[in-house]
Amino acid sequence: MEETDYSEIFAVEEESDSDTTSTEVGLLKRIVMTTVRVPGIPRETSWVSACPGGLWEVRRRWLGERQRGDLTPMMGSLCKIKVRRSTVTEGETQHTASQEQESTASVDSGEQATSYPRSQDSVLQLPLAEWCLLRMGEGQCDITEGCLEGMRAGEMCEFTISAWNAENSKGAGSDANGTQTENTTGQGSSRQSDCFTLQLHSFTPGQESWQMTPGEKWAWVLSHKQRGGQRFGKGDIWGAADCYCRAVKLAITLNGKTRKKPVDEASKEGVDEEEDDDDEEASTPCFDKENEQAGADISIPTEEEYKTVKAELHCNLSLCQLKLGQLGKSRDSSIKATELNPKSTKAWYRLGQACLQLGELEESRMAFGKILELQPDSASARTALKQVNSRLKDLDSKLGQRLSKMFN
Image 1 (cartoon, rainbow, N blue to C red):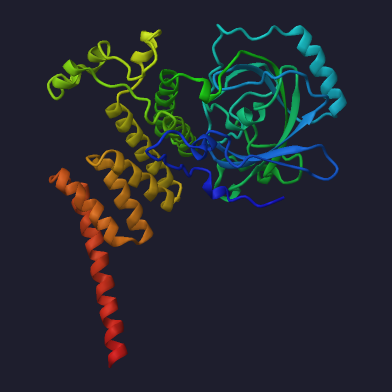
Image 2 (image 1 turned 45 degrees about the vertical axis):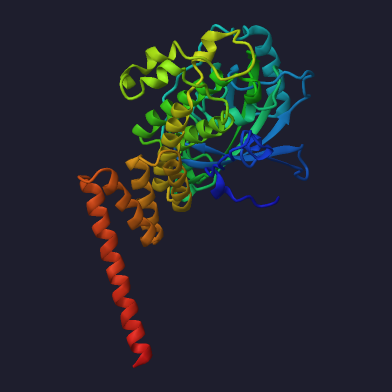
């Protein structure tokens, strides 16, 4: 199997000024998902998913005959699923599944996804051996969402999870319910892989991202942003980074699809900024096609709103990457944030922090200096700048000593 650079899991490309390119569209596909042929077993698919405890490699293979049809779960689909620990043979699993399929009601579009608290000590963020509802695209359980991609109603698959960063992951030896795995293999909590089956009973229709209206995409962007903030506040850094990545990838496709402010609203800028929500009701979309769904068009962001939120996403992602030790990616994300919003002191501070830890002291000093230009009374920026200047002074001193020895 060809090795994959899993360190790129949270790398997000930026768009050009033109319309969405094929590279950008590729960003919407699942990261590092490849199909491989494994000797002795059916074709399987492997990828890396993010859990509260870190990154996990997932390998999926189909059980039984594939169902016919083109309908599979997509973004927004509400899926009725059951996850079990894989302890029986494939034939027994298929027999049990067929009986349950007949006796269980199909999911209805009016139902709500089952809400479960995410746990740092859990790999799968869903209960085992019971029916539950999962909304595709929300990231409740990234592993399960990945397995559902391409499945049809009535199908089952088996998936194996292996801790990718087990040494630093609390979830490396935990089961799907958040409790430590029993010592059934002689290894106890040190076990770093496990096998499960996933049964898809039924699902509601969803959409691919390219089928969504700009307003629908923007709603998903804001939802991911809010969810990312909630996860970060609970210490779920990997989960927060996953949310911000999902939001950025959708936001990329909205480039050039924002709405313009009407003349009367633009003239009142700076006067009624606190009443933006009321002003939006009078705005008109910037599309050439007829406005058949005015209510939906109101939800389309203005260019200013688009850039502001996108800058915040990159800034938040930068902080997550910084805490996860992804210093280069943190620097790149903060640079994008400062380009989108040059007045964001948070973005400049993230850039200064990342550059400082990378040893890029001149760049770090520039970033912290920019904060003092925007906010002269920033104590944190002054403290950080003193730290950078102190390190630069030490480097100059050491360089002088080396040069002195060379010429003496």
